Length: 139
Image (cartoon, rainbow, N blue to C red; front, side, top):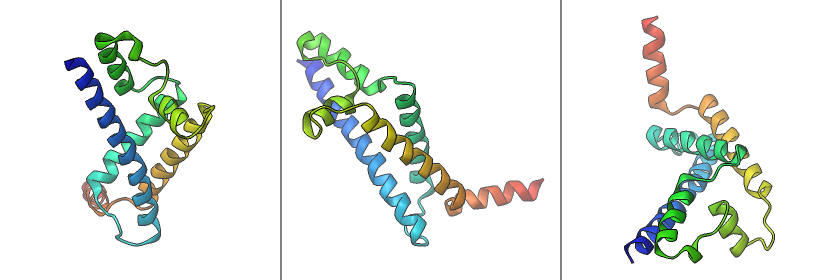
């Protein structure tokens, strides 16, 4: 029973991570168009590294570590409850797309990653700007 509870907790955490990535993209988009809308340097930095990591996994066609952990826990509870492949493809396919293709996940994820990198470079958070100014003044 504990394995099922742990697997369900992983699914919840996975969903929260996906929401963080999507909400982070929306905040990044809004901060580009509105000055000082969302200048939380820690949030933006974690979001940037997170979306780059997720994109790299998608491009390399690797499963998310949370998916692997969830499947391992479900297999210990009941092997019939595991599913092959990606968390996103599995759940998106079940909920939205009857025949989801991996590209339906890969392309938007890569776009969000590239956009987030560009925005981070073009309009870095104020604290990151200050750090770069201090480093630049030293040299």
